[in-house]
Length: 395
Image (cartoon, rainbow, N blue to C red; front, side):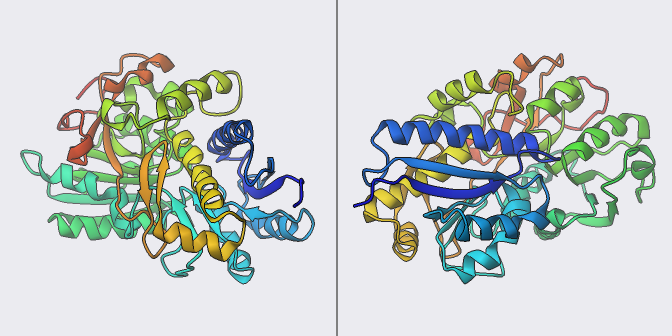
C-alpha cells in the first residue's frame, strides 16, 4: 500500500471578479483538509489539495484540468466554484470518466446528463426553476398583488439559466413578463439602463447580476426614479460581505436567494463551529468576512468526497459515483441525497429579504434579523416588507 498523499486537484477563481468567493472556498477547503488529516486522512493516507487559480477566466479551465491529470497526476478531481470554473472542465472530466463534485454551479449537467457529476448546490433536479421559485411565490402573495415583471440581466452566459427559470416561475405564478433587457458587463452607469425600462415602473424588477453589477444597480435604483414594488431575484453579490459593507442600508427591502444563514432552523450539526473557525481565519484575508454563502457548501462538498472514499474503501471513480447516487450524506448543511442528474434530490433554496440594516458595519449582517428568510416555510424566519422603497431605510 502506498504512503503517498491522496491528491485532489481542481481550480478556483482566486483572483479576478469571482476572487472573493474563490478565496472563501479555498480557505474552507483548507479547514476541511486539516480536519480530515487530523483524523488520520483517507485510507490511511494524508490528503493533499492541489488548487490552481483560474483567474476567473473560463478559457483557462480546460488546460488546468488537463495539467492536473497528466502532469500533477492527481488521484481525484474536484469541481471549482460556479459555472465559470465547472462547465469548461466537463468535456475532459467526461472523456476521462472521472467522479466530479462541483461547487455551486447552476444547471451544469442539465443537458450533459453525465452520471458521475454531483452538485453541491441546493437547487434540486430543476435548478433553473428552484433558484427563483421562492421569489415569485412570495411576490404573488403580497397585497395589492403585483402583476408585471421586467427582467434585467447581464449579457453573459451565467444569466441564461436564471432567466429561463424566471420566465417559467413568472408564468406559473400568474405574472406578465413585459420586458427583458440585457446590459453589457462593461456597464458602469446603471441609471440610464433602469430609466430605459419599459414600462418605466414594473411591479416586479427581476435582476440577474454579477457582483459589481449588483453594486451599481442597487445604488442606481434611487437615482433612476423608478418605483417597483419588489426588487431582486437572482443577484450574485448581496451575499458577499464586501458588497454588504459597501451598500449597508441601501440593501433594505431587496429580495434575493441564499443557501444558508445562521438561523436557529439551519443550525445543522457542525456548521456553527465551522463558521466560527472560518471567520477567525478569514480576518485580514481576501476571503469573505462572514462566509455564510460559500463556506458551508464548500465544506460539505469535500464531506461528500470524504464519505464516498471512506465507505467505498478506495478512489475508483466508478465506485465513488455509484455510491454517491445511492447514499445519504451527513454534512454541515444537513443531510443530502443526490438525484439521477447529480443535483440535490430535494431543493432548499432560501428566499430572503434584507431588513433592519442601519449602518455599513459588517456586524449588522451577523445578526440573523438582517436577512429574513421568507421561503421555504420550513425555514422561514420573518415576513416580507412590501412594497419596496428605494430610500436606504426600511421599506
